[in-house]
Image 1 (cartoon, one colour):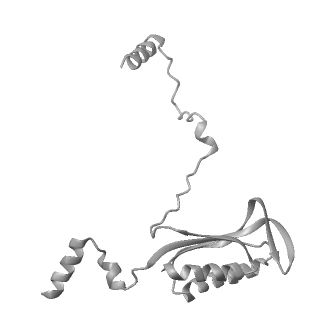
Image 2 (image 1 turned 60 degrees about the horizontal axis):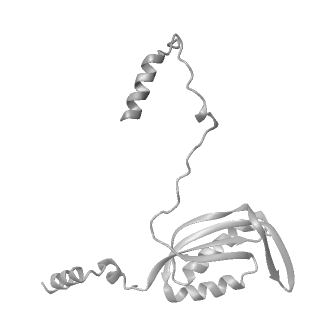
Image 3 (image 1 turned 90 degrees about the vertical axis):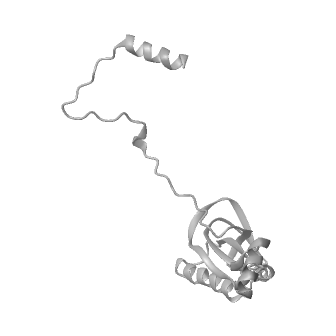
Length: 173
């Protein structure tokens, strides 16, 4: 009976019971987007992708969703200094990982990502657990064309008087 009262009190106070049972009230959902330097061999991209996911899990993070890095053209040149050598890049491997982690561990993740010489640039943002990726819509070239006539169907002549009456009815409405 006592457990029912405490759960009712929790609900009345507006607290989330799933957060209380998990014991990690400080856990938040984050997403790290990163660009790997293009000098990395294509065979090694999967290993670096795995290293970033392992880094997140080693800090107590739980992966929610991710995408394998793929080569992309950058909007502007980016500079990376490694071993006192300044290099400019116009392309890079872009990937991302969404995860939940204690807020206090994010600073440790940032420090470790800063030290990785294969990461050109990254960003860590707070986000929501739900899928926020917009579905791609197909926009075909043929959408602007008139529909083809069916066999045996002939074009009907347009009655200009009826057309004018319909236009006047639409305008007056």
